[in-house]
Length: 226
Image (cartoon, rainbow, N blue to C red; front, side, top):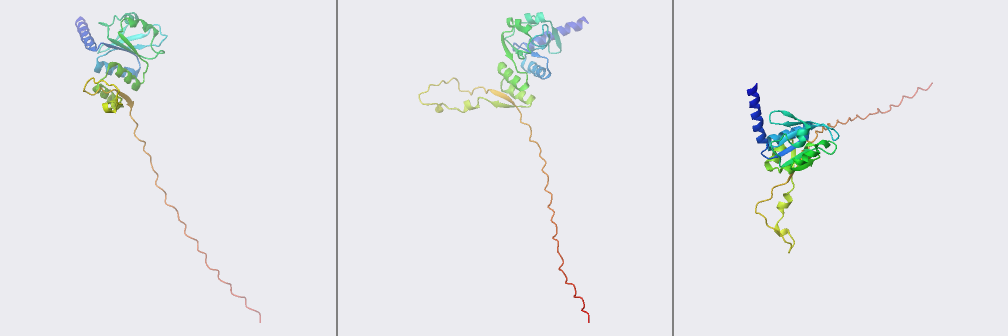
């Protein structure tokens, strides 16, 4: 049992070091769609994922941290002091609006580094804000768009089409580098497939045969009495 516990501890420390490659902590509510994105961020982008259960007025929310194998419980005091982390992160993203994020999380600003709130919990808006904060590259944007069946819109496309000759005469400009700027993209929901419309075949018109009236045959005259 002790050997197994020691092996698990070593594994957790190793996974912790991998998770700290980017020095980012993501604190998110324990909701299915949010946790799905969080797990993808942990696996692909090396963030440290922390989940919470509670709301703004919850005095002692339940807090768990993902170590790469399982969820481990973190008591509120250790979370407030950052004792569950091997070192202070460079940035911390807290997902949830003012009604969701527990007020008891306020002390984390002492260790959170550059702290940023992500109020959206809908997958599309949440990924757009997280992707901007984590500075997703093109491959990341493409991967998440494919993963969640979303479309990408390049917001820098009009800028790349602009030439220095498009500027008014006399307006100063700066040449920074020859390479094109990193595309800024936005995830949008894919358009649903067009609905199939069943077109009913027109029924053949019923043509009634004309009614032909027989000619009136005159009655023979009655014989006259002699």
